[in-house]
Image (cartoon, rainbow, N blue to C red; front, side):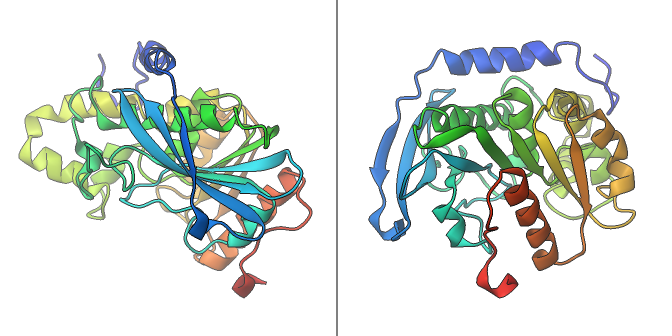
Length: 304
């Protein structure tokens, strides 16, 4: 196979079809238990355990609004790090009043760390020299399983299902066409090795660390990363999309990402970061509430 960073593997489709087929052969076997101290007067919180490929048991935080549904969905896909919470830190807990929210803890993250507890840094290169055993193959399957479970819930409006997050949000939206909206912030899996060569910042520095120790495996790393590169998933995305770009001439800025944006088959808006958590967060919140037909955006009190 070609080791060009731009090359789409010839068996790209088969690789992911086989992954989803393996997942489909395993029953989700959900176990759901209320978490009373996370419940409020306007929403009930649950812990959900599901079976993904491996087989491996994963965990998710589910919140269901009190009242008459069905409700739009915010599906929070796992970001790179050890901890996921009921709603992302810094966002409004009030969103749970209007949305079903589900935050997945993928394998290796806390609450899904038995028997595999990931290291951060370290997870990005776990079995990266073999596409069939790369840890992210299982993590992607975990994300797809979470969506499958969500869509079994009678409280969910299947016409308003938003995936929110970084690389796993894009990949899940590409592989799971029932996602209707996507808020995507590129972080790792876009020209990853090329960008790693120009930085010492983690998590991309993990790739540099790995290749300093194992330079002879560069071709295998390129091969594996090609199965996860955003450019190969973008043409599969049918969800209405908001792409949150970095500012200016960054490798993840609007100009650099223009080819990626053009390849997304659905209607896509791009927001260039204003280097402000408040301004960027308010923009994505207003976009999402408008697109999902929710009259009142869920802004934290200090953003109002």
